[in-house]
Image (cartoon, rainbow, N blue to C red; front, side):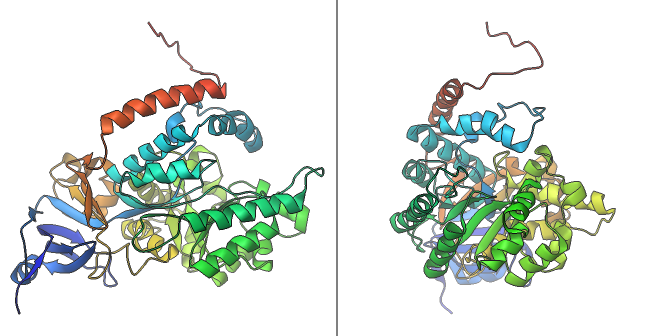
Length: 464
């Protein structure tokens, strides 16, 4: 067999493939040609059959598939991170109107572009090669422009509503405007294999979308092979509203109007009953769990969350970071720990299952399991090199457990997306990071100033 020349050969690495057999190579090699993986396996076998003018010594690396952040706010929050005190205790609607919306509305198109760049950089530098946006607040064109400069794979869209809560509003008009927005964005930013950033129908969810908008979003997703993502039931406010409006709980109502399925992702889903859980399993609907926001936002997941029961029922569970720490590896550690304690059972969500949520589970929900989420021949070359020459990785004994319980995004040395090395030696190869940080600082200060939200500190802060 003649030796095949490839673009890049990484040799001697420890490789967690996440393939159907979950093979882990302790002395492995990975060959890349163009945007795809052409060979993966033991080092001796790969080196015998492949050569390259660009060979990377992988002995210091653990290589994993690129992680997928399945729910992240890349606008609204990154430029105002942690500005709101964590001890603000008020009803969710009051927190939304007083502390959240003023920040979001204060963003200009340029602010949202910078915000999207900052969030994308943070995700890449902590090992996420793909993400599903929670929904751009207003300026989608600026967001796509910003994200596209970083080389990350993203699914974006305006966070669409379309329900009239004031009787004086024209419900038909609001629904039509929302549906036109969905149709327009998926046309302008189409989903194709050769495009990293494309639009999906992203709904606010909760009680904000009319049935007409839900049905239109599902029709668009079905017709174009896309996925719907929406928020639902972080608090009992959503079930209470749906019960009052329709006499049914949220998941029951969505099933009744025919908008659930394997191309639908619902985020949070902390307050559901047994029947709703059965419906999610029967319809193949995906559930996205965001551990840190659930705990910080006091969703009640330790007392009401039934994610282990969802997993047992066969529901596909993914992980997201929402509007907080974008290091998705922290979310994996939290999900692996949280329900062990609540159920007093160490067998719940072991490290290998948490890793599945970051990779193969998310790829399946995105309809891309044949392209990303695992390292296999013919798949996209989306992968991460974790630097093991760091204290949290040594001694190197059980790499899957150490990846989840000891490591985090700080050890991400290099990242490839679509065969392109977008992070090298801990830094972006695509943009000037220092310039971005300077822009983000200025933009963040201006957003806060325009929002009118006061600065609250428990301690005196001396400026000069």
